Image (tube, rainbow, N blue to C red; front, side):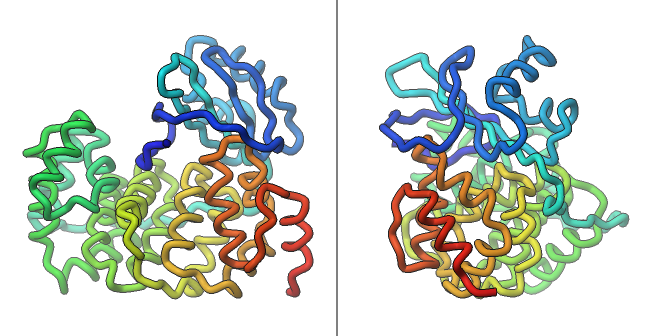
Length: 337
């Protein structure tokens, strides 16, 4: 079983299961390394290049090297520790073609925050990563017993987590809905945009909030994009059916994500689209216009990586080709324009 709360570069636990061939898997310093999405690069050559450039850096932190030193348009890496073993399985996603990588445009202003949002921002600055962890466990918000429980196994202070919930509860329902969108569009501070993204979790009865969350997933600052992913995971992690969302107004950021922008958010995006009932017609458009990363994920040997891609393809097609990536590719390319 794989823990559902994953952030890029984080080591999490899983049980290794048999998987079909599809990714390029080589032996790394701590266990298998699977490279997903490569076109020109060979996995072993890329691994050697990363090791040469950053020999003392943990391999799950290799995405920055790929982008800054090796010319990748975008990259992501996540490591999974096998339960009962010291072995680590690392997934590295490389986006070589920058054609469809499109980070959102950010503003240049500094807007005034109400007290509750300013306090959330201060918590985020004092406790890096805390707000993201809070986002990923939004499903326990309002339940004091479960908040204390999840805080314990996450290794964070339960009172601080409860304080985050309290500050979110203080956000004004009418004013701060509009303000969150304005902050995301106009404010230059990534810390402010991170908080605004978390505040959107108050307004998920509006389709526009879900659209803004996927737009935040394309923010040029990783911390903001990771917050968006955390909120989306937190909103859909309970297992209860999510509300149906009309995703067509969010075509531009979704195509950017399907095109390789912040691949660390791609699996979450696919899960959320399925959970919120994406219409098959619109889903087919996304797959048809940006098939490469979707098919690369569907062909991954790591079960947790391929599963959301296959579930998405099943949802939009009504077909079940399982792990047969060639069959899925044939189906996608057979869709009318």
